[in-house]
Length: 113
Image 1 (tube, rainbow, N blue to C red):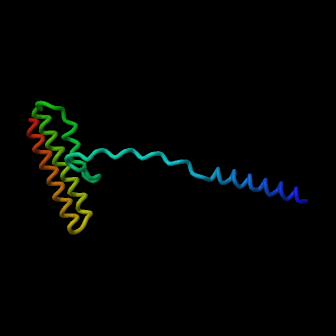
Image 2 (cartoon, rainbow, N blue to C red; image 1 turned 30 degrees about the vertical axis):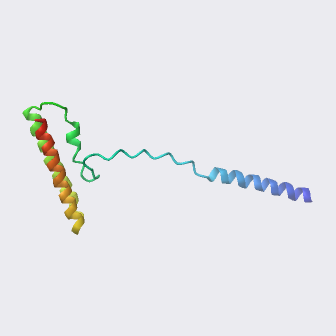
């Protein structure tokens, strides 16, 4: 009888350990490394620096300049619309940041003209 109980206890222990091993989650994948901070910080709501980085270096045609300027203005408008979701000092800071990004993008655009 002792051997039967020992065997049942061993079988139970093996089944529990196999079940526990099957239930442990797989190791999580390493998160992607954070990119180095850019000269102009971007918020997910207002990615204003994108047009400046996608423009080719050198002279721009008049049509390219007008299109880039229009894109900068649209990005600023979208960023300010996102700021309306905030309140108080956060809204004010958001709007100032959107204005600063637009100003920097316009200066960069004029330098490339």
